[in-house]
Length: 88
Image (tube, rainbow, N blue to C red; front, side, top):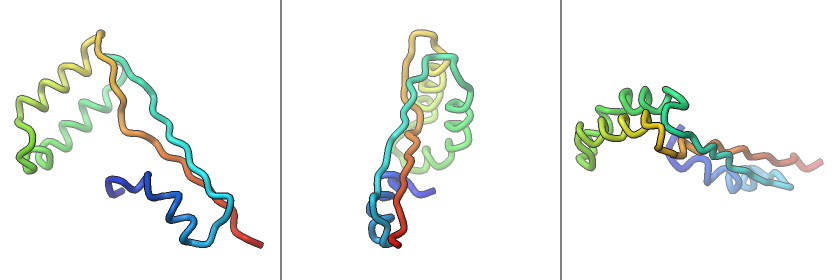
């Protein structure tokens, strides 16, 4: 899914003719060592992240190390839930 899709969902549902449109964002706070998915995600995205020129390989490794630290707290990707009703 394209970045920014979540914040456009409500308008997309409205544009599709739905009524009573709403949305919520779920953003769990994780602490270091809680989950392996962020380090795995960063490793899989490494080539694309490096291609931007905005981060170095060391930057990526530093973030991966921080996610394993028991003192770290971070927000993973937000999960957006959206709904609407089809007019009768």
